[in-house]
Image (cartoon, rainbow, N blue to C red; front, side, top):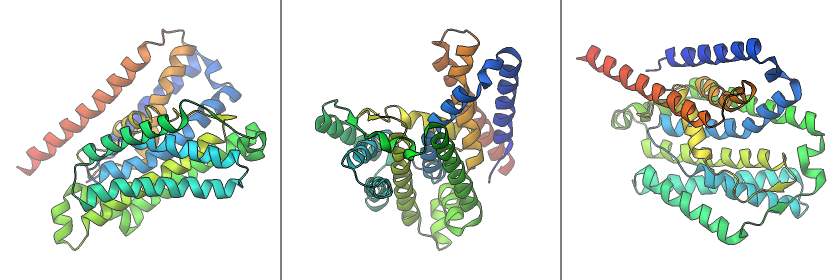
Length: 312
């Protein structure tokens, strides 16, 4: 059962925030700073497209930030070694898929709790990266920035690619049998099994695809800067999970749409620049974002109780 009301509510709040900025701080819409802010969120949107199916399948992956960091450094090292960018992209995607499959194998194959597995791999990969790099940045050749297209053209390409991926993933989740299987497994894994589905297989592939999309997002991150920070991705898991939950993906599984994830991400991403342009102290950012997340979870809980009463 998918309830679109959350998506519409988040979109309405986002529209109200954008309207308020147009009235009280029109400088918010200056083209270059706006494009720069949107471009910074493009890799986050790509990771969110991967984490949403994991949540819908009633799992969780809190290792995506560390996975993103590992793939960013790996892509940076390949780029610095003058490998062609398409080959670097393939390597980053492949590494992400392998690390995601490792998580999926432990969760689906050994039936271990996903929160425990991904907490462990989050720490392992982050500490391994810290040990290997010792805080040293990866310097990139100038030709790699923005795919050699120039900043504005490169930003447009990154944003367009992220939106195209969102459209493709949203379509697949709605229209392909594999996407419907994710909803079925998240709603009731045992019922899905009795209906002939393979819940463990579905779970494994949601983690694998999430890992591959982290690899893609890492490549999108690498081309935006002349250096790769080994701390890339720190806190990313909280941002994408929050965006998904705010956008209507139920933490209890079985519900959610990617269009809502886009609205949730946009709403949360607006908080910091909105406060800056309105000359409000920046320390309110986390408090406001936390309040938005709490309201979203409370809305989910209220909806679940209402559905339970109707069934009874």
